[in-house]
Image (tube, rainbow, N blue to C red; front, side):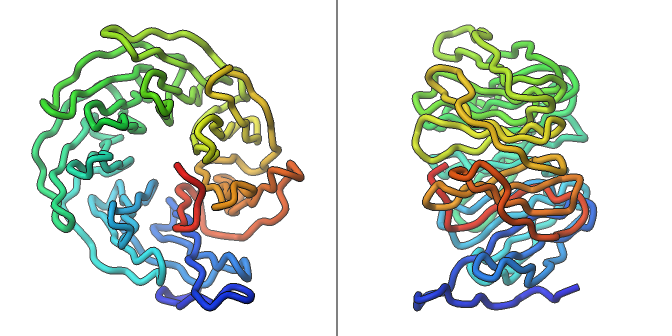
Amino acid sequence: MLLCGALWLSGPGAGATVPPLFVLNSLEANVSVIDPVTWTETARIPTGKEPHHLYLTPDEKSIIVANALGDTLTFVDPRTAQVQRTVRGIVDPYHLRFSPDMKWFITAANRLNHVDFYRWDGKDLVLVQRVATSRTPSHLWIDSRSTTVYVTMQDSDELVAIDIATQTIRWRIKTGAMPADVYGSPDDKRIFVGLTGSDSVEVFDVSGRHPSSIHKIKTGNGAHAFRAAGDGRHLYVSNRVANTVSKIDMVSYQVVESYPVPGGPDCMEVSADGRYIYVSSRWARKLSVVDTQLKKVVRQVTVGKSPHGVWTLQHAPR
């Protein structure tokens, strides 16, 4: 196993270093660091138990790795892969997000059925409120105005909206089977929910006082994680059981492209030019690289057990 802290090679013809790709290995309590020039794993960063998701701080100086069973956050330099610090006492941080106004850091406690609101001053996290939810809060989405956080409830089949100002539940609505990732349309009027226990993405109208389910987009068995394509209109969803990634038109609610990805595709990242999708193949211990022009996997890099979250600084708009 390689030691953490490797520095990055310069890209061909470029004078600057190329930031790495980070892949969480949930069952090994570490992060694989991938050099996107040589496409080799150059390091493994030890973390707390069961890292599942990661997120960039608003100042882009740290990637935060959420260690769900370790009750910790690992801060890593996104350019050098050096561990900066470990924050302890963050209870069951399964999924995480910053509000767009940069005032709130919110985590979903998947095992313990609550959502935590932390104040963020650019350095320190202070717990303000713990909101009890339904069974197994999974993924979070925060609207562009930083007024509402939407949370899927994996085992009670619900979408819950929490008011950020008061940290109280505003409403809840039933979803299809086993909702996982959640994504909001650019105008904040629609919420897309991946139904991992089904073969579809469910679309909710949240523009009025009362939410409603308005459409189901059939994508493939095990519809799970989202990643914006970067053009403001299209959304990728990984279908973990079907072994595909679908490209959805968020206006027409149609699947416009589909790409085969083996090994249980899960979390995704998109290259800055929009051509490549970096996918964690959860059951195959691989990072799979999809060429959206050729519509196929063109490269795989071996990583650790149960790879999950994927992130890099050089990415298409989210």
